[in-house]
Amino acid sequence: MLDFFLRRKYSYHIYYQKNIEKIAKIVRFCQKKRNIMALTIKQNAALSHLITSGNITETAEYSGVSRETIYQWLELPEFNSRLAAAGKVSLMQLVIGSFDLIDDAMGTVKEAITLKTPLDSDEARTLKIRLSASNELLARVERLSSTLALTARLAEVEEAIKNDG
Image (tube, rainbow, N blue to C red; front, side, top):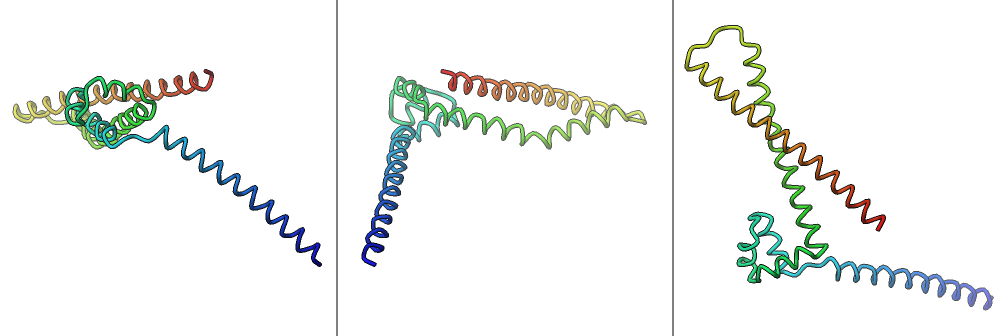
């Protein structure tokens, strides 16, 4: 009976020892990641301001650092990746926000194409202005879509290069 308890105690000891080692590995990994990925308060403030203003000089003044420091931070992988991610999110929000406008523009084009009765001069002028604005909006959305597609492709290529290198 004593032998049974000793074996059981030993097996629990081995079990806990293995788990403690796994937990220690996880903790060390998280600490390394936190040290690599953590941004300081000033860096976070600079990042927020840079996202909204897009101006290095203003961001440096706002953050209380030099322009050179901002440029150095732009070389940091975590700072740069957060900035890029924010840019992608902003671009996507812009596209999503313009869906209603795109529907309106397409409605204006459809209205002009399916026009059955002649318009008086004021109505014709109004429709011409709306068509011009619709055409401009649709052209910009097309360029924006191309930019998004190129950005996505560039990210894929960068990831492939990173994984190969």
